[in-house]
Image (cartoon, rainbow, N blue to C red; front, side, top):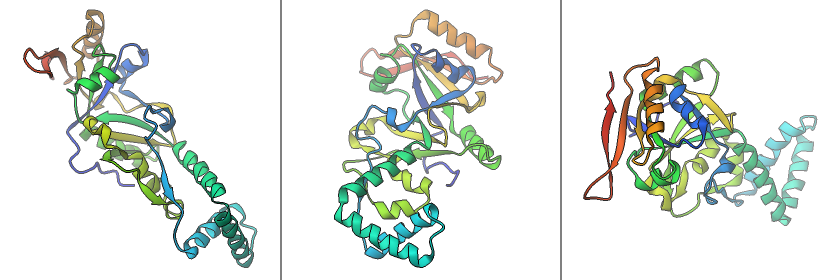
Length: 278
């Protein structure tokens, strides 16, 4: 997978957080972000794998032979071919079993990565309501240039693989051939499912940072990745002071803190600077 960011990636991407979960403050204390398992998402259509099972018989046999090479290496090429032909005939006569096999593969792939959802927007009233506890939480801005440096460094050190994808919004579930997907590189085959959502969600302008082989993991991107912090328009004084205290004691200077406020004439937010970058 390329370590480059999608074309047009903004200079800053945002993560909405709240104070009800103490772990959320780790984003500004240590630059630690949560990479959730795909099964935890609240949209039942998210990561909906719309496989089709058509294609030439030769393609199906190639998939079956490839599977047998991994699972039954003791078979000869002739035995593998005979076994593959029998297996494909069985599956063609029992499509429900093929769908079960596909479901198993889907779950195996979903178990291989964690997702940190980000947004290009810091001023969306709905997201402040949904993801920042009715505007009482905060929003963390990530420096995407620093994020790219982290991705490249971690890949070079062979520690973890981080990959950023911009969500594409559409009305139809991706329709991908099962046999093609199973024979492609695992990381390539999951991209259309990870990076496609219903157009109902397009207001979020979402980007997804994938952490391969680490679902449900709190991963430290590092303190330098945090560019700015925005406090919700309904944040209480105690939480505001806690955030300001954390920022003042951080080893990296240059973090701006803003207070969101309700606009007097329009249904929108405006931001007042509490602490400028140094």
